[in-house]
Image (cartoon, rainbow, N blue to C red; front, side):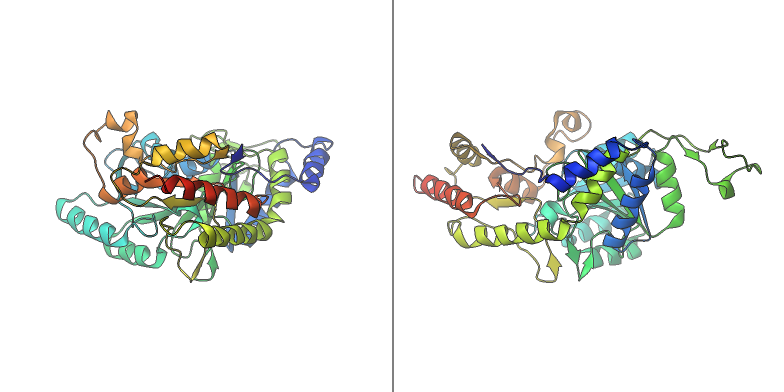
Length: 385
């Protein structure tokens, strides 16, 4: 089966991990720091903190805002459940925003209307988590302008968007946000096996986020509560988890990151090929010319016809060994959320997209001949309707 995405591992990656296996450091060694420094440079951020998953990174980032009971957090309905789950794990309340039917990201006009109503009712969010779906940036300048007016913080969930740009600046530079989170899951832009990171330009945030991922412990002498110069001494100053990235993952990440530009360019070339060869009835999300999309996903929408069912196309393509997938079930559809306040929740654009969406195979080693077969299979399916 041709998957919707897969990791790209070469001999350099294998050699990098093998060298670390032969070293004296498997955890808490030099490779993690090296990876963080390269990521910061790549994203044009002052700081980067790595984690064992993007979910851990999101949890640490949300925790740094001191979220708790009585705090409201908003995010896109079109995302993986982890974006919302970490908010609940911090004890805050989550709510969902509808999407722009063209970009599939948060609809800024809908956001503004919701903020106006929340201002009247006294339920404004403390935090907004933007989601750069499929690797296309949200309209961050407009969202940031609203944050200044209504007083909320911004966290970018850029799990799909390493290597993408907004207004010619890399996603992760945090020009319009407090923090950005990336994912290094195998199907993402680069992989560390599992992994994630937070970028920020705030030293205060960097310390809080890093401490959260290492049991709340610091070994930085200038931060000790007592004067102490012995090398063995450390202090736990807050509660945290063991969310650290290990040396093997960081070694793989360093090697993978050297190929990021190639991965992004190849994904864009393949996406452009799909744009040309797919049947004209297929609807393709809008991409802004002032952005670079990283194309973690290539989502399509079927025409909105009563008898044309997404699941029928899904089964048709799966039978032909094309590993298409659905991204995403609106978070509020999941039983946990239905049973906890979202039973009758309904967002028009998110629902319309979910009913008609499908992610086609897209990864750097995908062949254009395979894309042609996918397109031909879709075209033959559409002829039956």
